[in-house]
Image (cartoon, rainbow, N blue to C red):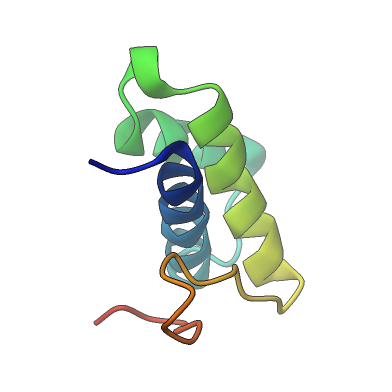
Length: 77
């Protein structure tokens, strides 16, 4: 089972990767993406983490790795 920290980091990475594909996204588009990624009952803190990941990509930063034994990778593909 995933811990809360792992869930938050996964949400940051989701936002980061989404941002790389949607560099000119508006605030409404980011909010829509959060709703797409996370069901209504799961949003809130995960949506915030998604937005944080998006902001990191905009600033040229990378979220910390989900597994500390693995380096941060900008694209999971």
